[in-house]
View 1 (cartoon, rainbow, N blue to C red):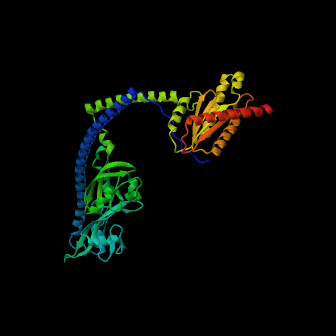
View 2 (view 1 turned 90 degrees about the vertical axis):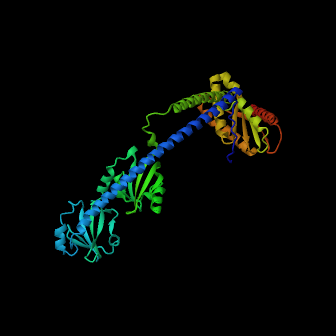
View 3 (view 1 turned 30 degrees about the vertical axis):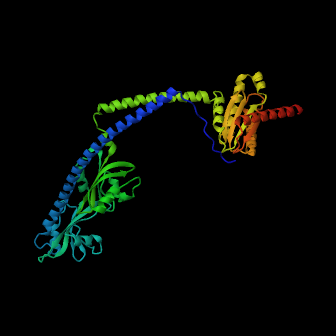
Length: 475
């Protein structure tokens, strides 16, 4: 049988005064909520603007410090590169001139890149063919150049190069100095980030050069591939080659962000402050906010009291306390609503227990109540997807189903009988729970009164009971 869509019949009624209170409370709540929301939003906007101003100042300072750091490296190399006839020195003379100066000058190692594509690494005393490498092309095309990080098993280094010229002012090579990436990390760490924010240095490919987590640097994974992230603001900074303000999302958390574009390097400095932390250290909330919160809480208390009263009233009126199924009142209200529903067929099924008086007289009312609960459980179990179950009184139950055919009704009623036999094993005495039932169906489009259909179902139930009684007597 196909699952039927059943109309929910759990309704109750409020007194007029309760309805008025609910409306008044709702209006007050909306007005106060709007007032507090407007005030809070305005205050929030002011705080955000203040934070953004601070971030702008911080970014400018960081950008200047980074440029000074790179300039200092460049100045050292340029000083060496301008040493008279450094390029004319043979390898032995160059090695003696530069050897051992790398660490003193702030570099991990220094090497000379020749215009024939070879690189002479002074401290190592080796020559490498690098003419086909992108690094060589970049070094020869730029007066001053700083590379992307180079990852080895022991170090992450970056290289700054400056031009070497001959006496005719022609570029004939480059002097290069490699330094540890940790130097840039320490430079960034010197600036204490306010509000527990994040500070990153990112290249165009989205790789971290500086990050709050060193694993992000070593993984070399692009931020643009991170899950639960939104870095469109960073992408926009690269596309427009300009500073940006807005928001970014990392790990599903939204941050206020300032992105500073470093034009000479095609990198960006990214500052992020989690928006929620802006209010973490606030020392006070103005009196209006306190008053509003108090009023709103009071209103909520009143509303909860009314809802609880309403809920309790609904339970008392609409639920049978013994069997926990719908009460006689609830079923009456349901039939009242369905009386004018001519778009569905409506099946009314009457049930009552056989020999129930015998159970009460023989085993007591407690056992009778237990059987009633079992009966209600079985009806609810079988008809849960197809209709509403209610207790009219005593051992009489009514099921209201929508769009059930006569064959489906008979099949469901048979399932009730079988299930009752199974549940009878729960009893302590030799008694098989059985039921008599009768049903009547008002077809779709029919305008017959449901009271008449109910009467017919009741009559059919008693005919069923009498027939069953006669059969039992013969046997």
